Image 1: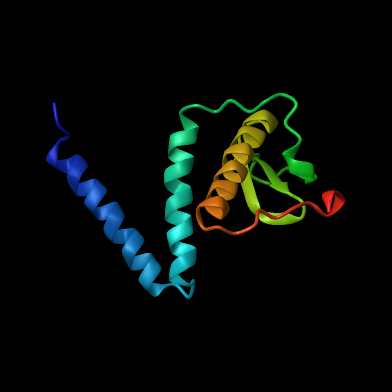
Image 2: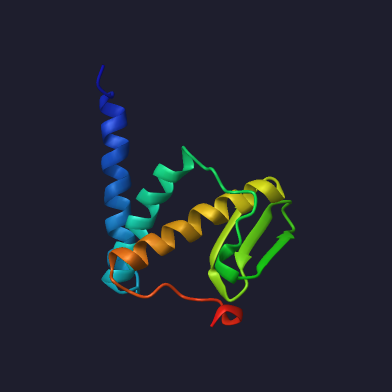
Length: 121
């Protein structure tokens, strides 16, 4: 019933690759910790995306466009690092919802204020 030895090896390899990338990166350790936490949150959210149809994005404007490879990209205009892509505009917005909710969770966990859109300040 347990995973195969290949599954365990792949999981170990993935963890090692993350550690190697983190050690070779110029990003501060706290940024890597947030990225790992966000990745975990995102994986959990992906199984239950339920973006409300009237979601207001906390006042942030959304940019949504089709790139040269045919992927739809979405990001919060004032926070371009909060971004996502998908095969359709709707899937890109669903992914952006997961990314933004995950970032807010990270801010809350770290006791930091959640950024506010300039229109809401």
